[in-house]
Image (cartoon, rainbow, N blue to C red; front, side, top):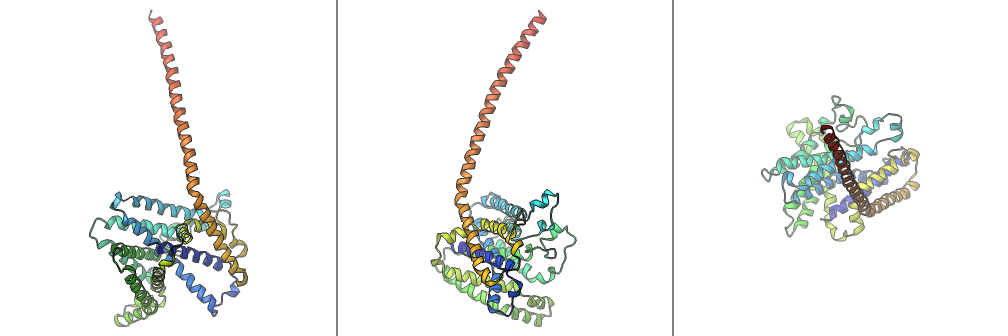
Amino acid sequence: MFFIDVMRAWAILMMLQGHFVDGLLDNAFRDPNNIFYNIWLYFRGITAPVFFTVSGFIFTYLLVKSPEKGWENPRVKKGIKRGLQLLFIGYLLRMNLFGLLQGEIYDGFYLVDVLHCIGLSILAIIGIYLFAVKREAWLLPTIFITTTLVLFLFEPLYKSWDFTWFPNAIANYFTKANGSVFTIIPWLGYATIGGYLSLLFTKFKSYKNLYPVAISIALVLGASLLFFSSDGFIFLYENTGISLFKRIEENNYLFIRLGDVLLVFALFMGIRKFLEQKTLLAIGSSTLSIYIIHFIILYGSFTGLGLYRFFHHSLSPIVIIPAALAFMFACTFLALRYNTHEVAIKAHLNTRLDVLKNGALNFTKRLDSILREVFGKIRGILHRILVRVRG
């Protein structure tokens, strides 16, 4: 299912240009009546749902693929390590060295971004997996789909909560009031629906007509959510009187974006035969490196000296379009070059570590030998002294 990696590559490239244009485009050109701006804005909104869904899909697929179950599954420990790593990197990228030198941690350090939420989503998927994997087979997919529905359906209720009963560092995972870009709710819902889809693919992977059927279902369900879900919630409100359905319809972005995600899945499954490009697959497997590099260049991690600081909302479309393409190319090129040399770098470091370990071991052995010899001589001297004293 390499089309998933290509989807992830597409999503990260869309994210690069989306962040670049949104951060640097002059406000004078943000015209809601301009068809080109509206098209860009709509497709920019697809990026994050696709990225979260694909992340949940890939991780769950690898998790359940292992024949070992529960804690014996090596993917569990790897996943926990990966989730914590993403959380660590998310905070690291928001650290300002100049502030640290002054003994101050800026409020921006505690804001939550996509890496934090994906890291927590991975940990949540592992928790659900450990709870359900050794029980009935239907439980794991049921929890996945239920989590998505609960988070999406009740979003109008919990989005109004301020979470002031938590410290800001914790509240930032649940509310955007302090400036967080993403929150774990409702975005975990896209990761769990990705996990649910991966379970379906795993179950029917040997089915002869898997892709034609999957494409048809994704097209029908995706189009239904995109074009008819709002009307469906109005129908439910009118026939049940439950105000929650009306509130969902008033800002029905979660289900509409889920429809977009399914249509993107259908598209990439449909053209999968044309996607066996090594570069695309490499980009798809290098998303973390690309994200880190883009964050440093655009937002100035550690120093605050990024493009965002110098060109914030100041560029015209004539400049920003080629500049965005150059930015995408530079971030991707640097990430692929880094990943190409990463194995060699790790091998070199491991070799150095082995040399240091061997040197330390030899030194310890030599020191032990010397100490034994010294203590042996001291023991002999003391023995002779005692003999003479007794004599």
